[in-house]
Length: 266
Image (cartoon, rainbow, N blue to C red; front, side, top):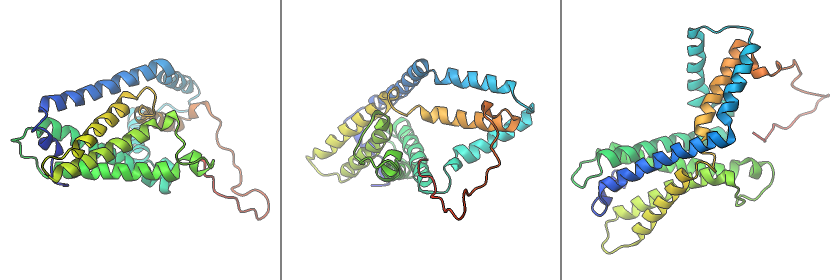
């Protein structure tokens, strides 16, 4: 199953042009949803206004080389490895979900646009990337959903409690899981079967929810978070600190012999 391109098999009944049009539609939904999010929530406007105000209190003017150095370190550390989450389980789950999603989406685009015709010979590398990415996304997303969410881990809410903010991670898990099941059933190559078509429909619906729900979910945080991390580190480098006061020289322990429990709300 891991080396089979499910989209090439699907091309026997569905024209590749329809699959490619679906991908283009999903990209358009992301763009429209993100623009609506920007206009309504005004996150980007606040971001640039805050950065402009912070420059007024900067104690140092960064050179171009220093800015490039700060941005490069931020990309390598805060963005690529999510170092701000520490070395715990939350970081591992986030990395599994993040890189799994990148592999899953990249494999989907490559196989649909380059190897979706029935006569095409798909290199085994791309189906493996697609399946491994889907598995990583399901594992990382499920780990976060069932065990690491703040309202479950620290606030004792039941794992099945769903709010609007959960739309992104649930749709992401669903699209990866339904895609895996669809590919598995399709690879069995049994005659007169219908269950693979059921999971294909579920796979399509979950993608519509994922990409069509950008405005209502946390999807756009993938674009905001890197920019916020870069701005934060630039503000620390030039001394403006986003208009926040410097950290106080407070002791790590308060009182005599008090062994404080590590915070769980991050």
